[in-house]
Length: 153
Image (cartoon, rainbow, N blue to C red; front, side):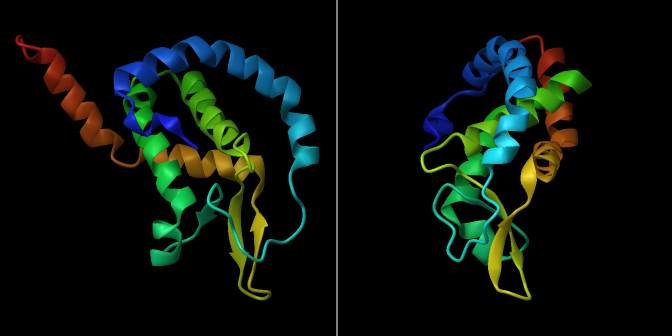
């Protein structure tokens, strides 16, 4: 599980700054291996580490989505203050964190024709993660700017 739920943003920021360099190199080398290991089978019942793609209460209330949103929230401040390359690495790191859980988390989309869930793959998972990190970024950037200009900060 994500033990990061009780983390402070500064703790996550420090941790990710240290691991981003290692993660970027490691992910490049392991991405071909990971793609081969991704389940190609359809999934009837998602487990608690899966992130469900789509809209509505079912996906919103799913335990895996709640964990995913918490992890995203812990990394938003770092994301909005990062370079474009660092942002991509943050998104990839979150996807990697989900996929490395036990059992491995998957990013699933429901096939309405079969009523089964299918893994969307790493590219779409990173896009979904990047979008989640961007949600509310403008107001966070504004708040950070105000905090930095506050002489009592």
